Image (cartoon, rainbow, N blue to C red; front, side):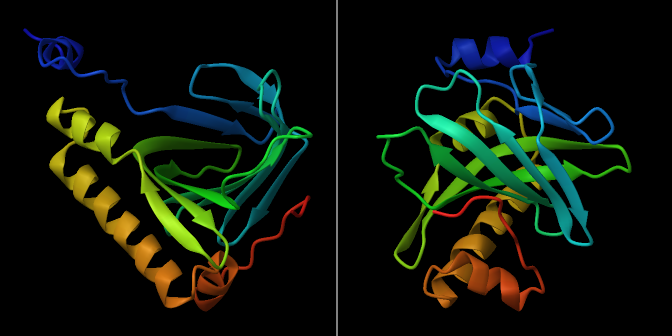
Length: 183
């Protein structure tokens, strides 16, 4: 039997399986897609989602990560703080994800598509090449791929209707995000 990786390699496709992250509320850790376990400064559960704040250890450009997991929207919204002297090229980074919430542990599966938001300026869909490659390599089934595309369209449409103001769009959905750091 031929594996998905073998099919991707035969097609010359650089591909990785969907990235999985674990958010352990009890141990206050975040296990990233590379299986590195990171200490979390803060977890906060709200009716609409889960907030996480933690340092970015050993990253050349980024110093701190804040993320909201919004299962009702299939989104992970992140605000990265850069290291001194590093310029930010977006205000928010929106991952299209499948979220499995739990009382003590949450899990996300990245669905390849992302949206970079420059507040009140624009939004760019990113990684569509990875999405198409993953679909061709059958790393995503048709239903999951359709859901990811629909979610991406909803994000871009919602942002455009609110002049690319992410908090304004989320406010219309009854979601108010708060962040540790601003700017």
